[in-house]
Length: 168
Image (cartoon, rainbow, N blue to C red; front, side):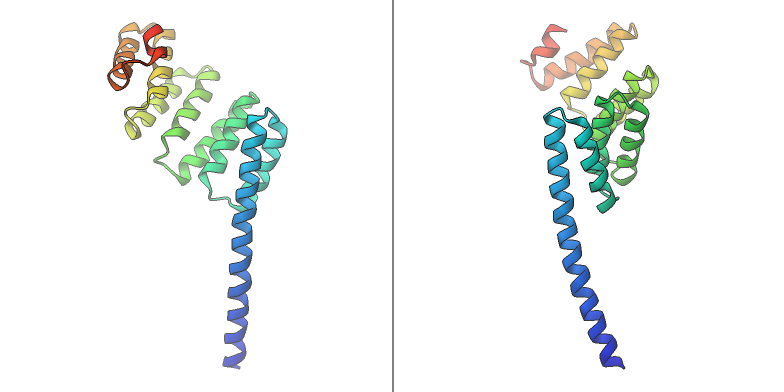
């Protein structure tokens, strides 16, 4: 009986190992196809592919982050925020997910939440010019030219030829 159980466990281990490898490959294929569809502007297809990928790998922060980007492009900001929050629950040190959630909040007319997330993104990646520039634009919208100028100066210290910072 012990021998039978051992063989059974070996068979289960081999089958699970094989399935998980093919599952990982399938997830990667779905993810890459979804990213390609999103870049091509086929947002519905991208969303469907990300939905399939998340079923196979529900602990993959990149899938949630990228699906959130698709939701944001489709103006489904609440769903985008949910996906970015889920990505952050898996990978709390992902500056990109904070930035993306901040832009979704900004698009929803929630500048305080956006500022909070831009700040979190900069705590993780303090020299990220995209986050600094986006936050500078929001400071300007909110009428705080001094803080906008501080972010722009910081960008120029990082890259003194950053055209976006020079013309803003």
